[in-house]
Image 1 (tube, one colour):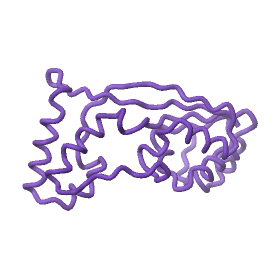
Image 2 (image 1 turned 180 degrees about the horizontal axis):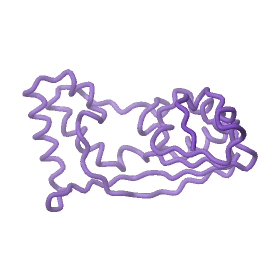
Image 3 (image 1 turned 90 degrees about the horizontal axis):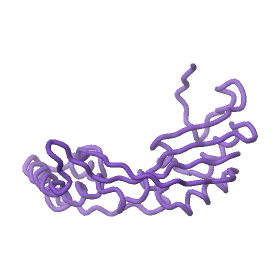
Image 4 (image 1 turned 180 degrees about the vertical axis):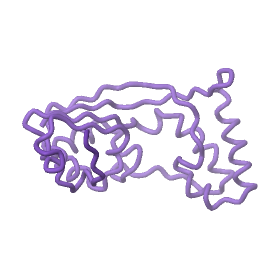
Length: 177
């Protein structure tokens, strides 16, 4: 096994691997491509004919309360509105729309694009890593304390003993070059 630290959008992937690849896999990474068509075209170019790409990407934020509930609870206390990114903006939900995924992968040279919907339960996330991170970083301790209290209250309906179970939904995407 050989590891290379490289930009999947521009690196000579087949060259780095010593020849065409049989497959490529990403779990929650490709949603951050600045130009997803170009990046996936680069991945496709590295695959042998018939090679496959497999991805796990989040479905829409509305189907992922693990992110939405704490985010909305923190908006008031942190004094910062949350505006969801546009569908073409890089971010965790940039490949949430099935039609967009099919379009991006098709434009990049993939065929037989298939999306299978899976739901999972995920524990509450820390405010420091979600969409309110910037507001968290700029907030004073009082606002942070109020935000934490608001999030704790908002996730109470999802509590089961000592565990918080918030639903989440992902796409598992496969396609062939």
